[in-house]
Structure formats: structure tokens, C-alpha cells
Amino acid sequence: MSTGQSKQVNSVPSAQELRPTKLTVMAVTAWFLCSLYYAYQYAVRSALPVMRGEMAASWGSGNPIGHMISNYYVVYSFVALAAGLLLDRYGARKTLPYAAGLVAVCCFLLSTGNESLGSFAFVAQAGPAVFGFIGAVYVAAKYIPPQNLSFFVGSAQMIGMAGAAFGSKPVSAALHPSSGHPVAWQSIWAVMAAIGAILAVVMWIVLPRDKASLVKPKAPLTLKSLIRPYQIVFENAQTYLCGLIGGLLFVPTTVFALVWGTQYLHAGRNASIAVAATDVSLVPIGWIIGCPLMGYIADKIGLRKPVLIVGAFILLLAEITAIYAPIPFPLRYLVPLVIGIASGAAMIPFSVVKEVNRDEVKGSAAGAMNFLCFMVTGLLAPAFEKLLRPEAGHAETLQEFQHGLNPVIFGIAVAIVLSFFLRETGQAAQQQPRSGSPVSQTEPGLQLHPATGD
Image (cartoon, rainbow, N blue to C red; front, side, top):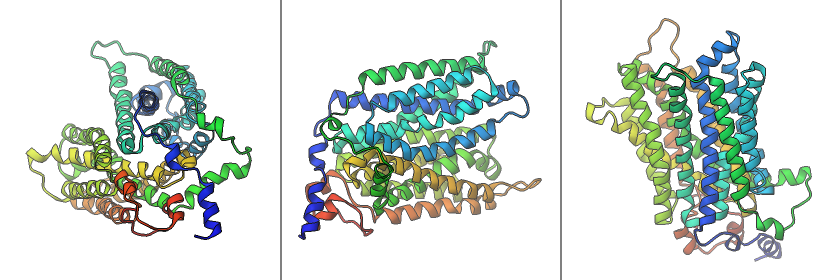
């Protein structure tokens, strides 16, 4: 080994010294609180489309709700990068309670009913909202033992999806109750604000202090110190692989099923709107099952790649069936459920991206992963809009839908191929390291090559 290589290896903190070896009550509690915050911000995000009609009626025909939703996702994607950096620098306790408090303040501004304040507040809360999932993954990577990481990352996504349901079903029931006494939409936002304020206080009290920051002083806050974590993350080719794979595996659910699924089944398969909506609703239910399940299997066998590849392959077969095969009645509900369960494999790259990057940039790695996934889906969504939206006065045929949905199948196939180039980071592979360059162990994945268990 050269002298330069020795210095490089010694300058990197030992990952084994920083990573926990046992699951503790403190770790699970901290992770659960961060996951609750993720569910809370998901509920806030999901509530606006449900209240859209009532808010539009209050604000008039020129209401900006459509622009609010699109601008929300623009802010969300770019703040993801800043969120990861702030978590790396200041830790969960000094960021997540403030993020929850800011979302609560924005909900309070929405509760005033003022159009200008409300439209600003909804878009602005996308910034602190992004700390939800990134924070939950950061805390899991920091305090949860590596052999349990994938399960907790998947479970965080499951809790977040439960928050989406909370933001839809109860809000809809409050606005349109069977009793005939609807709750004002402003009051719903006030309740959301109160929940966020309580969560912020609890997180401030319960989240552990970052002892590592007391031992290791932070670098001065300069432009270089802000850029350096993302320079480390984005110089690692494995980061791009994780982002591309995760983004491509999210497309079948976030773009196809949840956006175009009902229209495809209704116009292409001649199902009623009610039946189509029921079928599509099984996809997020499968997602809730699949995210922790895939993580649990990956942790149990100590390997990430086989679970990712097999899950993606099952997703590929299910999508081909849904798009091309005539589905008999007994299997009508099974196919969307399998799509949701298999798409839980998309969460495994969120664990891998932490494990192929240095310990001191785990938050930045999570932010970069979120950003890359969103960019993939954000770039592909307009393409599907162009391929699938029918022309005025023209009813789209099944063959036209199938042609427009071909990129879904192609994207899953690409994700499977790319998965073979991921570095295996599971505990089973770490227990039997392959002899090789020390540099690849301290800065894993810098070379893009098919990994076979190093």
C-alpha cells in the first residue's frame, strides 16, 4: 500500500466504531418519532387535494391551488439537498423539531383562510416537510444496527403511507359527513397546526443529543464546508445507481398506478370508475405491506441485492400482466396488490446509499437519494402525460394505453440491470470481505463495476 493510500484510510473514521451493535429503546423511539413526523407531513400534503373544492369556492375562480401543488414539489426536491446537509452538520435533535414547528406554523397560516397567506404557506412548508423521510432514514442509519436498517427504512415508508391515508379519508369524512354538518376547511388546518406543534415539542424532548458532535468539532461554516459533503456523495458512482434504481422502481406506483391507473382501467379495460378506483387503491395497501417486508427479508438474509433484484423482477412480471394480459376476475385484486408489495423493493436503495457512503455524510446521502429519485419521476411524469393524455374528442383505446405504458416496463428492466452493478452492503457480505484495495472499503463504490459481495 502506498503512503498516500495509508493516509487516506487513516483519515476516515472507523464505521465500526460509529455504528450501533444493539437495538435499543432509545433508538426505536427516536426513529418512531421521526417516522410519525414523516406521516404528519404526508397527511398535510395529502389533505390539500381533498379540500381543493372547498378552498377553491372560498378563494374564487382565480385560486392558485393547481400552482401550489406543482410548486410544492419543486421546492421539496431541491430542499432535500439542504436537509441532508443540515442533518449531517447539526443532527436530528437540532433540525427535526424546528421542521415540525415550521410545518405547524404554515398550517396555522392556512387556517386563517387568507388566499395569499395560504398559498405561500403551503408551498413554503415543502421545505421543512422534506425533513420527514430524510430525517427518519438518517436516524435509522445513525442509531439502528446495520442488520436491522432495511426493515426500519421500509417501515418508515409504511408509516408515511398511513399518514397519506389520514390526510385523505378522515379529512374527506369531516368535509362531507353523513350527518350533514361539515367541518370548515379552515378548522381542519387548525387541527393540523396543533398536531404539528405537539409533535415538535415531543421531538425536542425525546430525540437524543448527538454525542459525536461533542467529541468531534465541526468545521467552520464556509461555502467549501457546505459543498464538501455533496462532493463526497456525488463523486461516488454508487449514489447515482441508487438514485436511478429507486426512481425507476417508484414510477410504476407514483406515476402509472396512482396517476393513470384509474383512467387506464376505466377507458382501456372498460371498468367502472368505482371498480377502477378500488383496484388502484390496493397498490398503496400493497406498498404498506411490501416496504417493511422487503426490508425485513434483506436484513434477515444479510443481503440487499438479491431482494432488490427479485422484488424488481416480480414487479416487472406484475406490470406486464396488468398492462397486457386479460385478467380474470379472481386475480383482479391480486395483481395491483402484488404491484404494491413488489414495489417495496424500491426502498432498498435508500439503505444501500447510506452504506456505500461515509458515515459523516449519511444525511447528505439521504438528501441526494431523495433528490435523484424525485428528479427521475419528475422528468418521466411529463413524458407519460404526453403519451397517455388523449386528444380532445378522442377516447383512448387499450392499444394506445399499452403503447404509452411501455416505458414503465422498460424502466423496471433497466433498474434490474443496474442493480447488478450495486455494491453488496448487507451484513452477510461484510462478514466475509473479499481481499482488495483498502480504498474501496473506506470510500466504497467509487468505481462502477459489477459487485459480487465486497
